[in-house]
Image (cartoon, one colour):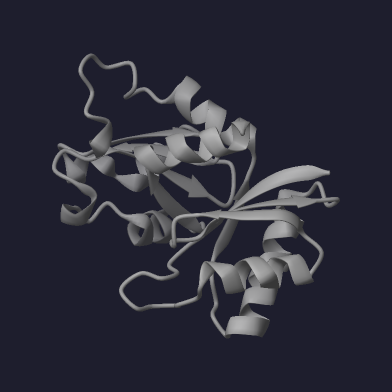
Length: 180
C-alpha cells in the first residue's frame, strides 16, 4: 500500500469548483482508495492505494471528480519524499531571518531542468525570487502572493505544465501529516 498526497488546484476558492471535503472523501473511498484524509478545504488529500504510480492515481482522481462533481480539476500527486525535498533543497530556508510567510512551493506536473528558470523570466518580477528543483519551484515573494503576477497561471503558460502552489505553512503541515 502506497500513501499519496493529491494536490487539487482551484477548488473551494472564491466560490469556484465547490465541493465538500466529506463528499470528496466518500467519492475517493468509493473508487477504492483507503485511509482518505483531507487537510483544509482547498484540496489537499492523502490516500492509500495499491497503485504505486502517482500519475495514474492523479488521473483516476481527476477523472472521478469530473464524473461526480462536473469540475475539471488539475491534480498533482506527490510523495512524502517530494515534501522532504522542499525542506532539504529550498535555497530560501538557508537565509538568515527568513520570513516563511513569504515562501511558497509550486508543484508542477513534470520534472524541470534548472535551465527552465530562464524560461520563467523571473527577473521581470524582481524582487520576487524563484528556484527550480525537479518538480518543484521554490518561490519567495517580496510582498506577498496576492500582489504578484508571478503565479500559477504564469508558470503554467511559460513552462507548458500543470502547477499548483502551496504556502510554506501548508507544506510544513502536510509533511507533519505524512509523519503521523
